[in-house]
Image (tube, rainbow, N blue to C red; front, side):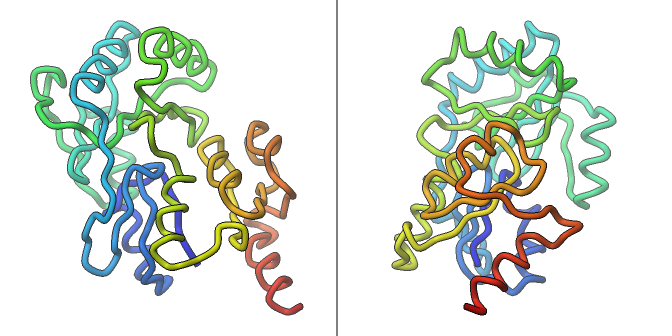
Length: 227
């Protein structure tokens, strides 16, 4: 079993340890591939510093102060209810740095804007006017607009791990529920969208399966293995 997530490595590592998954983890929407045992970043594609700075500046024009991930740590200009809840839920530190543009001097792995779901499309369209082709944008949760290096996605992360493990992509089955899983399902040989998934993902999925309450992923895997 392989894990591909938008989360930072230090956030997902405990889950991999509990599940006993030794294979490389795809993190940060594919911007990082990490060995869960050693913590070594096998792939780490950051956002160009000047592009990151422009992104933060453009978000500032939209009255949005983003979360910025650098070297597997999370930084904010000032704490918000969201950042405090995230830190408590994940049991991870979130560091306040004040003015992000004054502070940022290293290329970040990911930038995340937090906004009301209805406000995300306009924010995304405005950013695309200035940053089209220079940054990758996707939504994980309805209130999160995530940005990263334009050369990576969960799909590129999956392809990298498959090559390292000598796995054929067309024999891999992927599961997802968000817009940020589109490239993952397109790269895998067969893609399942979880019931109730984002409509953009449902449009590219090969099939659907039940959600968590119905243990859809587990049931699908067990059915395949029992054939």
